[in-house]
Image (cartoon, rainbow, N blue to C red; front, side, top):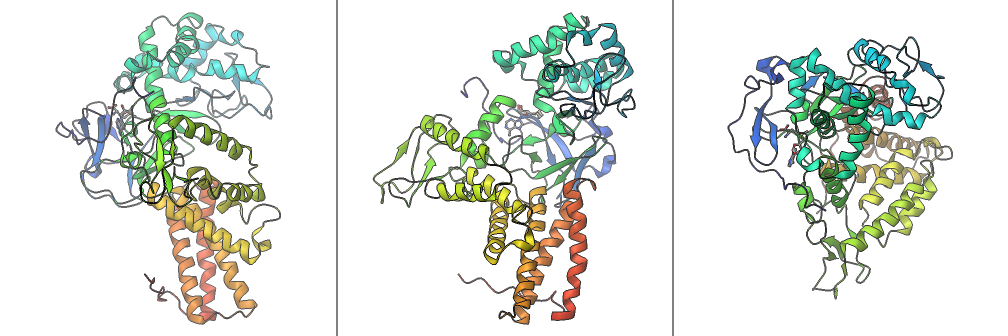
Length: 542
Ligand SMILES: C[S@@+](CC[C@H](N)C(=O)[O-])C[C@H]1O[C@@H](n2cnc3c(N)ncnc32)[C@H](O)[C@@H]1O
């Protein structure tokens, strides 16, 4: 592995910066952002190609850019979905309705029919004239996904005559054809499902094979997965320039019109690269690097990937089976074949060594156990943590994923509803939330969705604990109560700031409103304890 792709990393830009006005591909027409408000400029590096850096200090929560997509369409691995609004048709709820081109839609009144980011009139007539719907059996919904694979590439190609400026922007995006054409699994699949379909089945020979492979590559490398309804991807004229880092400094959200908003999660200094994580944050270095290599076609050499401890999060660490005190860490994490050994060696541990292959097999086996855990099965999850407490580090990514679920499910599942939790279970939820916040401070710091959700989650058990102590008349002084209330307000206030940025109708957006309500209610406690905003947290003893 690893050899077929070029090496990459965060090498400082070599070329001169391109200001946004110099960016002739249309990046200067940023929607909603005035030219002189722009907080970023485009730079070019030998390793990363184009990327953006900040032109001034950007504060946490500040909008860096916000834009509508150029193209929206089904993801390559989608199931059956409506061509207009992308609603999933897998559940059969909506029955099978056909557009006049023969393809499936959610209903005759679908709001996405004949709209620029849905099923356009042009697309409809191409699909109808080529009798394309005759090629699939509408009873077999899984087969439709294969045909839908060619829709987003078709929509890119249609811009060639319909919107030349955006077509040029798309064709100038990174496609990695040089690498992708040597990966037969990718290239041949695209040849059959996209190139042949568009050229032979739909008769669009005006698009060359290489042009079609290029838009496939552009979509694979640059598109954002968006929407809440099913698997949908969008290409954006500026956001694609954001480079990757496994500890990103931005987060993003898209709304019902597919508008994408990128915000700073933490302070970004002038000249610093503006980054997002292309890989799943809650995976180990090995898995993230594999994902990036196989999907974005470069090797990540970021600080988190280069550090065997993953910046002290110990996300990939095992407990040494020999000495039980040392940790098994990867010797050279940016090398896929690197072996793993005990960090106690040679002091106290005679030495424990594991090959990359043995580690992979072990983790695959344990992952299968995690996948089998029911999402409501709190007892099963706790039993898993207990079973592996002498094998996986307490914040190993496999443990941590389970802990994130537990931190949210305690209080929500039948038999574990918040008021039914005993004192130990309340304490457990608080402990888990704090651990989740501590680790996310390292791997995804700042104002992020998970931080907002966890801060909201922690307030309820803390409030109940406080009420119970008060009603049970367990010894709790007024000053201790004030400190607890102040801590709860701190969590809720940050949760409110973060979650109010989410779409109001989303579960996170609703949590944001609930945080606002909770903050109002908590004011009533002043009647009991007096003003607590000046309460001092006890100093931590070293
Ligand atoms: C979404 S594009 C970003 C824009 C692209 N650099 C361009 O010039 O069009 C993603 C590609 O940028 C490059 N890239 C982004 N982040 C990188 C990083 N941290 N290290 C190396 N290459 C990176 C890789 O080639 C990757 O496939």
